Length: 307
Image (cartoon, rainbow, N blue to C red; front, side, top):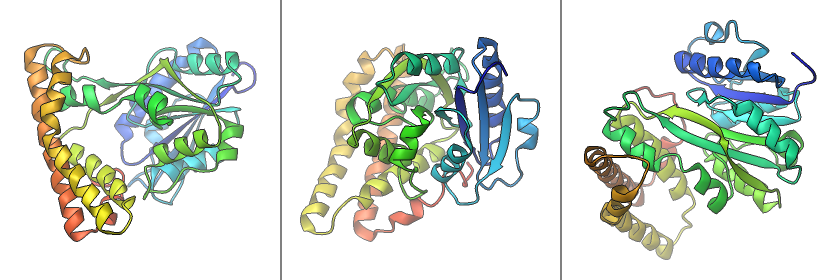
């Protein structure tokens, strides 16, 4: 390494060694920019420790956190970090060229910014013929700029924060929380400043199946249901929201027809079909929770269930 560490990259991992290897190779290539950084992989209870996936990667440490959830894994990595800037990336993400350099450079030039959210795009398996899920996710799943500029948080699949700020704000929540949303909004509520950095870009594969996409939304819906206060009025608002979700594909069709995130009538039609299917699934899940409760069964795992 040339000079002191400038960045600690923290990666939670669970049973995805092939994806992790691809992520690590994308990071290892960034040593060419001559920006000193370390990588901390925190395994969160995999069937087998990803030692093979980590082999040959420069300046990497493999750690283990037994408390379930990506939040606790990230917290453990942050506690072991040695640099003044922490960067979080998911094990299935591929850091694009210049990712490390752009984060370090921006933070150095903008001392008034405390945390960053980078861009997140979908890795299309066959760009000539995207699947329905890929077309849908390319429009809806990773709205990184909106998260930062409208909602005041950064997705932890591509986020950086000054280490002192992280310590001041406190740790990510556990598996029962949407940890990136909750942490980021806690930070910005304390007055820490956030910025969107499109140059710090990562790509991530779309869900492999509709079942995987549905489970992701189940967790999100369950978290939102957990915020519903008791009482008839709160439940009425929840049911109204359920009806809005059912009707939403009609309104969203305009966005799908005009977006530049996909091209061609075929891909737009596929995106609309997938959107309609997942919105109906979400509405059904919302109605089931209203009738029977039991949200906890959807939030107690992150990728422990396999497609």
